[in-house]
Length: 235
Image (cartoon, rainbow, N blue to C red):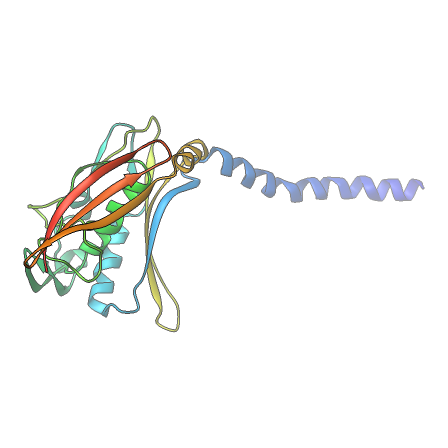
């Protein structure tokens, strides 16, 4: 009996040490300011060419981990910067106005569009956003946000009393498959508040006239529905 008790006493500190990482992980999960994903968008990149994928990844690296403090505004262009080869961007197909051209950083409007959608679904305020003048294949009309350095920008404001952080990641595997995730994260309390609001984007085509399409988007929640945009697109 004495030997058994002594063995048990030796084992207890080991069990306690083993529990430390678990307890620490649970503590950090509850207290870390960016432990909860507020909202995110995912897209499969298999259909995109390697030059577009490279531009997505370059933009995502600039965005990932960026923090927006309470009351602050975030500028996509200020963060991502000029789209130049020196900064890691390559020529690729993208929209410039209503034209499809090969430009450095071409295609990253997919990234800004996903950030726009995730911002709305996170309950953030979008204070500046410009739709494409022409319908694009990669993003449904009304859910896009075009960016062009020095001209059109996506600006998001944090209305909350605590900071939020941008999630922006590209992932790939040995088979060549890749995907892109763009979203926002906050603490546990903010995650619960956003989940309770139940944000969703409702998009509808409300009319066509000739080669022009009119699209309306509403941000719906459990409390109210709010019209976000009414945009015109050339078909």
